[in-house]
Length: 89
Image 1 (tube, rainbow, N blue to C red):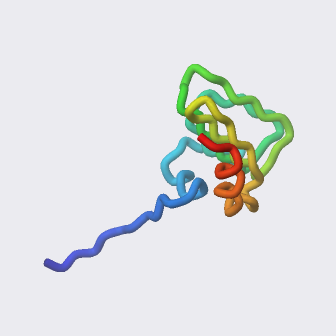
Image 2: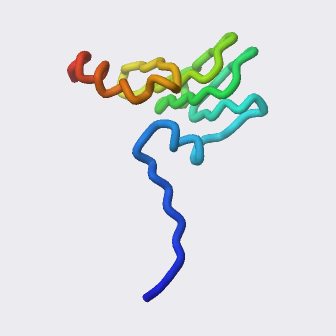
């Protein structure tokens, strides 16, 4: 059976932007975000009752999950594995 299908590789955090809400400043969000003078950020918070606030930040990734928080520049995401390994479980 032949067919045409689209493919999205969700292997990295930046790929999540396709699935998150986007505000007028290009911030992609899941969770309660309050941002001022901040743009192009990716914010993921698994608990919708928690608030993330950004002030004057651009091109940052904030991930809050499992009681842990990661904050990184988008251009350093390839190094996330290194810091996670250092944190243990």
